[in-house]
Length: 75
Image 1 (cartoon, one colour):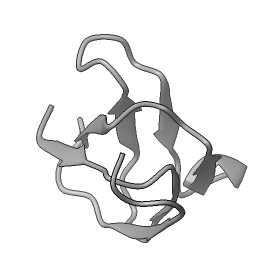
Image 2 (cartoon, helix red, strand yellow):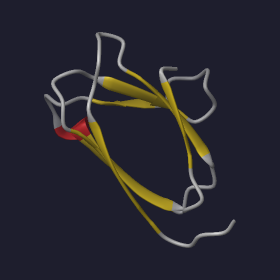
Image 3 (tube, helix red, strand yellow):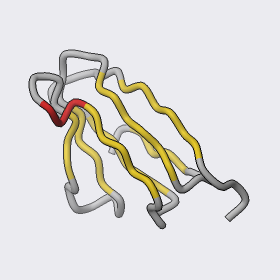
Image 4 (tube, one colour):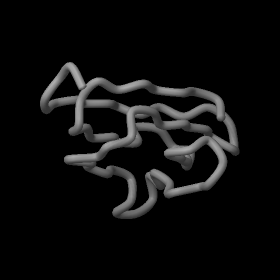
C-alpha cells in the first residue's frame, strides 16, 4: 500500500478526483476493489463497515481521492 487510513467512524465515502485508478484493501493484502475514474466505480460509499483501516495504492502513479466521513465515533 501507498497510504493507510485509520477510521473512528462507521460511514465514509471515497471519490476518485484524479485520472488514475486507485485500489483499496481492508486487510492490506487482498484487493477488495478500485476507484476507476472512467466508470461508475469512481466513487464508493461504505456505511456500517466494521473495518477500522483501509489501504490504498495507485499502481500507475499518483491519485487524488476525496474522503468524507460520518457516523458514530469512539468505537
